[in-house]
Image 1 (cartoon, rainbow, N blue to C red):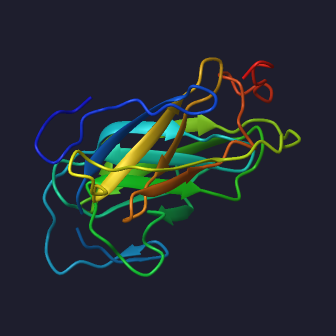
Image 2 (cartoon, rainbow, N blue to C red):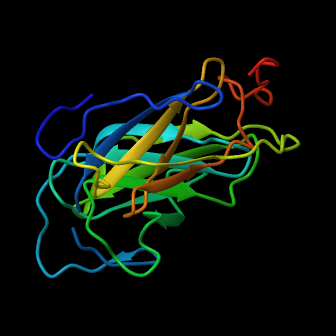
Length: 208
């Protein structure tokens, strides 16, 4: 857990299933993305993504999150080869570019059982500098109908942090995460949750 200024300490929040929910709070930078074009008025500094995490993998989507130690632009280029034919921006940037230190991107409309390659653009520079990162989607499964986890994050002063990444650690299940809203509220869907190796739907304990 990062304990520098601007980050919140980790806590545990009890839920019906006894899930451990960890969170980190942060702040933001400005960028413009138009398909595969990036427009900037001046050269950006080298700002390497840290703590890159791939979560929420299903047959049709995946989430990629990372942190930067400065407020900086961030988005993902991805595809089924190193040509990276698609671009995805932060989930909170629906109404235009926003500033972030915690970055959270959902890749959607993916194909089942397919390997995807990606790079992160941070401050107009692509990372990793060589090669690329990758993940493989799962097979298609019938959704479980499990209700989502809905909650709210507040700091020691009773205020919502500017940004929070919430991760769910469920024994035997895949890695899950979500990003909070400015109000501190969050929602984490559980209907498509898979086993750790993504080979089958996750089976909830019968006494949960």
